[in-house]
Amino acid sequence: MPKTSLRGPAKTRCGFTRLLIIACLPIAMAGCEHDRAGPQVAGWQLIDPEQRHPILVSQQPAVLNLHVAAGSEGLTPSQRGRLMDFIDRQRVNDAGNSRFVISAPAGSANEGAAMDAASDARRLMLGGGYSETAISSEAYHATGRDAPLRISYLRYVAEGPECGRDWSENLARTYQNTPYPNFGCSSQRNLAAMVSNPADLLGPRTMTPSDANRRTKTYEKYVKGETIGASAESVTILKPISN
Image 1 (cartoon, rainbow, N blue to C red):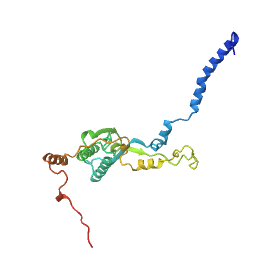
Image 2: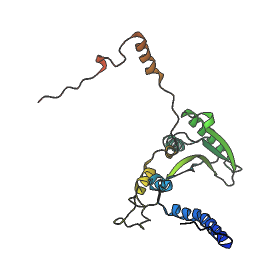
Image 3: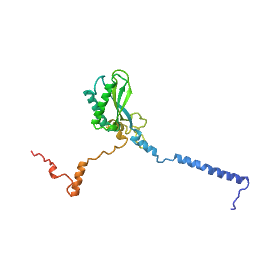
Image 4: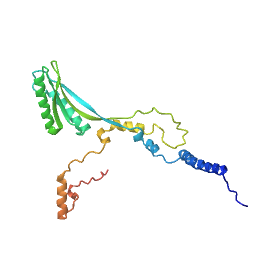
């Protein structure tokens, strides 16, 4: 059968039609690509309870106010005890992440006594094992008779998420096979309440110096070819009690 060739206006219309189809083809393909289901990385991130219910760690000031009477010389025994408790809490809960700030009043009637108390507090901190760089002193403007001596440091505080608010999903009818919105929230909240040093949630601590006493003795035994473990005489063997 002989082929029919298009000429004139018919050929022009056919070419225009082909160009229109080719131009619309990427749009149709894009629509199909958008509707096609595929792996969604963002969805996996929302499943993680640590990211869905994050623990907020911030620094807040911990302040100890010591009221120093005019004419007194240094801290009283009770004030020293309060200061030592404050120092111990900082050492346990904060692990030396921040330094102490001793703020003495200036311009008040007890300015001289407060300065003596500040010096006394500084000596107690140095005696407790803190270095000079871990303690700073400053003065603040105060009026009145007995302005307090303020000792403070920035402590890390962990705030847990609020749980039990989102019950929008029907737990008996879910098609995505993903955890419900409140999943893991209580664990995150309990962790924030129980953590001893909230700074540990931000990153690992630096290594402390090792104890070289035992290491030196072990190395000496290793060089001599002796047994590195404990000797039989130093090991206590517990025998069962017979009736």
